[in-house]
Length: 356
Image (cartoon, rainbow, N blue to C red):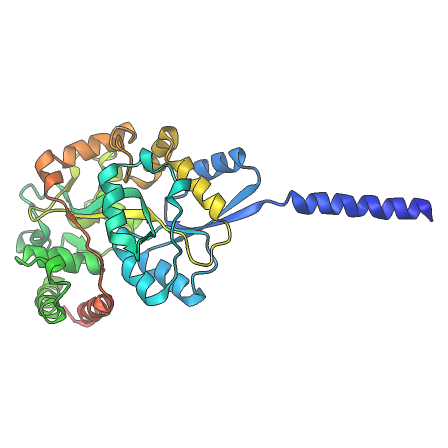
C-alpha cells in the first residue's frame, strides 16, 4: 500500500510540475509578414515559457473579429493608427496601455506623439507605433515615364495596363487627385458624401481603363513583374520588394502627397497575456530584430534610424522613391469618424457592381 501511495504521489507531483511549466500563449492578430518565422522562433527561444500563435488579418477583419468577440480571443493586435479611436468608442474592444512597460524611448518621438494624439481617450493611451509606410502609385518608368499621381491610373495613355485595389485608399487618393481633401471633409458627412459621389463616378468610368483589380501584394507583384500592368496603386512596401528584382519598377509618391499610415501595437480588451504582449513589443524594437522585421514587411520601423535599419535593397528602394519634399508632403490618415466607412463601403459596392 505504501509503495502504491508513493507511486501515486510521485505521479501527481510530475503532473503538477508539467502543468506549471506549460507555456503561455501570445495570440497575435496582425498583418501578413508582420510575424516572420525567424523572429517568432527567436522570441520563443528567448522566452521558452511563451508560445506565439499568429493570425494574419487586415484592418477591417481585425475590427470585425474583435467586435464579434467583445475584444477577446487575441492578446495583441496591430490595427492602423486611424482605425482605433472610433472602433474603441463604438465597440470597446481595446484596453489602455501601460506605457511604463514599453520602451517608448526607443521609438521615433513624432510618430509616438502622433499615434498618442489619435488614440488617446479620456486620458488613456491605447496604441503605440510599430511600422509605418505609405500608399501611392508604382510605375515601370520605362513604360510609364510621366506618371505622377493617382489620376494617371485612369489615363487613356495606359489603357488596359493599370491596376488598383478597390478599398478605401483609392477613394481617398482619387479624391485628392480631383482637388479635394478628404480628411478635411470627415467632419461634414454631406460634403464627404458629395466627394464620394464624384469619386465613384470617376472610378466607374475608369473601369474601361483598368486591366484588373488586385487584392494582395503577391497578385500585384506578379502583374508588375510580368509587364501585364505598368502602373498601379500600391503600398510602398510592395514596390520596395519588387525594386530588388527590377530597378525600373519604382514607388512614386503622388504629387498630391502619398497617404501615410502607421500600424500600431494595441491590446484587445479581453487579452489574457499582457506581459507577453509587452515583451513582444520591446523585443521587435531591438535594432537586430527591426532589420529582420522590415525585411519581411518591407515597411519602415517606428524607430529613429528605421530607414538605415532596412535591408540594403529596401533602403535603396526608399531612397529611389522619396526625397525630402515628398516626405514633407505626406498625408497621414486621419481618425475615421463613426459611420464613415459604411458610406465608403456603399461607394465601393457601386463601383464593383457597375459594368464597364
